[in-house]
Length: 148
Length: 170
Image 1: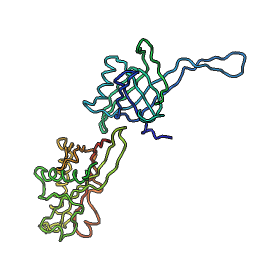
Image 2 (image 1 turned 90 degrees about the horizontal axis):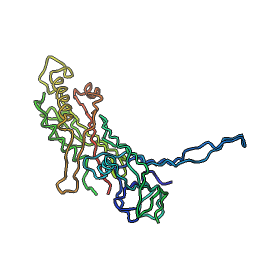
Image 3 (image 1 turned 60 degrees about the horizontal axis):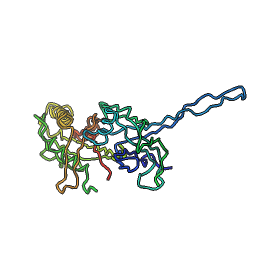
Image 4 (image 1 turned 45 degrees about the vertical axis):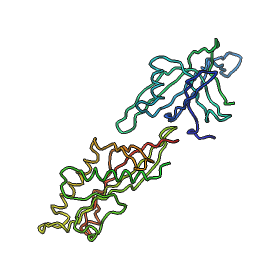
């Protein structure tokens, strides 16, 4: 089991076809919940409730160490303010190591909550969720990505 | 990789800050040293010694690119109360004892003053360049060493100030 700190979070300043990945080293704990809606598919044919999956909810949640003038903090904040769509990757290892895997999707920033506790450092809570994005005329869907 | 002890650099920076405590209640000399003066023959004619040393260090993950180092810097004030010229009171209750206690309070106030909380530090050969931030509260418990006072009339008080240093990983 790889340690959580070995996971890497990236934002892509290039394209899906030709990514230019910038590691977000300011990230602390990173979570990416993946959960479809649970649709009740029950009927009289069974004593058991049955379900089928609805739409899949996906997000990247993390807390960043805030630094004034930091490129990653600024880029994520600007993406929220402008509603910009950017590609993000949350992998279990470095992006240049074959086999590293994780979620990859174009998304918007929906949370950029800044925290300034009296007796601790300043941090930013981030939530990124998938958004529509096309490249070369094709919609780029979120994916479970494995580094070739 | 840094070749110099950050703890020692922080302690050395605090020497000038402590020595510049305004209007001290008792004259003193601050120094960076690993051992405080606790014996009367060590204290000599300088009845109050202020010794500053980095005594503890702990590292903690901050984020995927950096660590937080916590340095516990000890500021020890040691006074030979029998050097007091006060025959009317026993050393522990002398006016010198009161003045030393006031001095300790002044040093604590001065070091924790907002203007002194961030130390910008570097080492001459350039291999270390960092900021150390004071994390409050400081700790002064016990205020003085009771046994030392009882046995030798030496007033010794140690205050621990914690400094945070952000260390970037390569």
